[in-house]
Image (cartoon, rainbow, N blue to C red; front, side, top):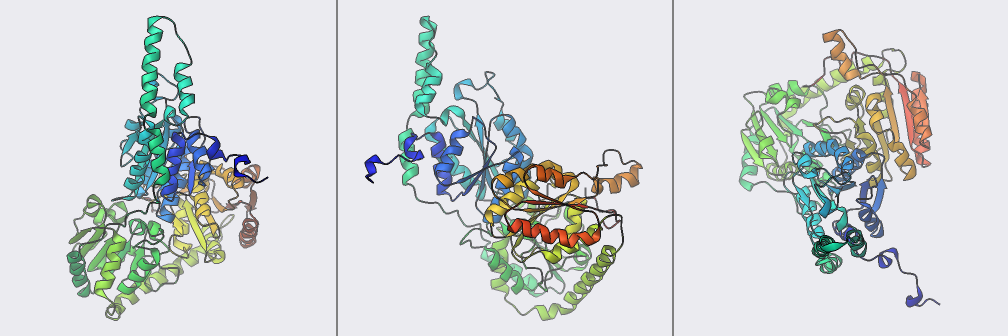
Length: 602
């Protein structure tokens, strides 16, 4: 028989609605496809509810990796990433990753477990003041006090994360709001004490449980009946400001455009008004010499004649007009001193504070920098590039000169493999459909000069906080978002140790990334300055560790490279293994060069 009344119920039908189901229902409505976590009893119902609703639950080996993965999803898709961590140490382990997301302006929601509402502040397991701990790292923190509040709270958190200046939001969810009411009643009322004190306690606890679950059914109905949600479009610029910027651009003789990560906010979201392709067309239309930073790297592809890669400070010192599209005048621009003091500076930024930091612009536009560029291109139109041809040629000549210098350094012989030569080989085998993740100091900074992202939303790095350890979470999230793309993780040997265990996650979840570890047996970016200034390498020395064997222990493939002639075959073998479904770590022993001497930033 195939009568519906005799069929086994689904998991969702078999388990009565609980707070975890309500949270998961909201995530599904908002288009969340992945939930990153490290399991814990405080949050288990959220994980089970998400799985029932078709959200892929990805369990990682460190809570920081869960948040880093959520951060990467947000950058690549434009939809807030979501991570769920257990109470206490689960939340504290996530703090660095949350701060990194805040400074990178990545929209995400951290769901944190917490002790039962009636036990808060009474010495319960893993009970700490999580809201105070996270106050300076998130846009807002919430704590729920009843099941009825959960859906609205999570909805508000998702919307807030993506609105204005994007960033992380924390939602604390006490454990007694997540499990079934019958179970919670048994927790609270199952122990019977005698006498009047016991009777009073049971009366109080019964009232408390009634309050916790009041309105739960109504909340469940609202979640089930509510439509799928679309996020609001980013703030656009005032028309007056765009026209004024167009006039200033029309009179410029040596313009420079800097595009930062903030311009890419929402660029990966389906149907976005600032989709990556539209933004790239706008930049090409404007025709200005352009430097791309952070998440904007790759926006113009590897072969655009507008894209400049080197000698940015020299260009800024000579420019008469500079557009900072989502780029603050922080340490990366020498606190504004890199820009010609007589230049007209036009800054578009979602944050007034960042827009005016260290140097007040001639024209400040508090709006989404991507939308500003799209509308400026529409107003300014084409036709100025021939007038800037001498300026373009000068900057192109500088690029060619620097490329020749880099190539000469890459050709130098070193003990083991020259790091620049390795990066040149990676760039040579990188396919058009690829995503690059950078997690490291000296080696990754070297790679940023030589390995060219192939298109928009194809480069992920920590951002302004410079956090090591993003690699494992970023890479596995990239492979989830772009399963057909080759995902390359460029790891320094120092940073690799922070998240090498996520190779296990990649194996278990079928995420065949390619990780290349530049293994120079040291914290080289620090050692360069420390040894010269202090004459001591204390704390900066590592070993040529067999990281490839660690990967094999986790179930991945490991390849060791010691000589230059082994590099290309190893990279090609890694590509074949990844195509067959196996995560790969290529451990490349590096020689020393002085390529980045004196490059430390403060």
